[in-house]
Length: 479
Image (tube, rainbow, N blue to C red):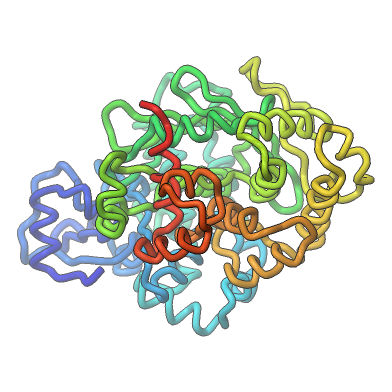
């Protein structure tokens, strides 16, 4: 967005939640920067400076407000090509891709040069990718110091710092505080075996519909919807090591945020865990922008999101098992698949017992072992082909992968048709314009049997056709 001082100051005075995360206000008299929804008395207009990101504000010499906590601001989705590139790179940095693979790899996954990425990133956020990543690490550390009882040493490494000394020095330099000073505000009764966070979103958020969608497709042993909470087991690889644990997600009763509980076994993998939760729950969505594009279609369920994926391979397998069968039937076979090949895991929940298998585990299986779970042999071969492509690195099923290249690779695999490719793009790749136009539910909701006419009708909803699909599916559910 254009940071017009008049518009920004009006949003600041009104504490307009629609602008939360879209800009940050820095106050020259205090050298502190805030979210536009901060509850402190609005500063004088002449003392305000506006920045497109927290990193840009910190680069300008400002430190984060301890009241509104800029690290809790929601993300910023955009359909502008340059902006999307920068946002995609930012998301990958949250997932620690930059520090593990380097800027060249991030740029390659986006199908651009690292020079182009630096230029796009600077235009969007006002800082370099390295400066942005550094700020994200500091903000996560600040959150962990404030909201958990993790020792400072563990906070440093969980936030992505290579040494405690570097962490302490940078924290003091940026925030003019020692890390331990934030511990005065840490929750005294924080559970020793769970880490708790709040991830903000732009309201409205149709939690009942999103959670019900995930619950209807939950894989037995791996995920469950109960007591108004979505829970699941997770596996996250960091520095070549797998970290197993569980997460629990629920709607905050008072704030526009989701409450996320994370097992402490995932403490060293927090950046990618939280990044994947944001993708799974589509927290960077701007519902006002989408509602304007979809028009009447979106009126019945404002704030409906497109549920993403915690693990792209898992969603791909789920999509293949769902070919030409009901949601319930696919769920049954997916449960058998997880039980047969997944990893047993201990959790405090009776219904969570298994971590979904990795692609490399499946890639080494004979297709007959997969087929005996209750699916046609051809479908088992498709699962095996996808597993081998993912395990070899030829197929990237993470958000922000090169969409067209990935779709072409999917279509080239045996048994992957347009519906499966588009469904995977919709959820695993988080592509907002994915459109499985041959889907039975989509055709039924539109009262149209000709897939070509459905495809033509979808042109009116570009570039948010994935959201249109969610609304069409939702229209078939009896309230």
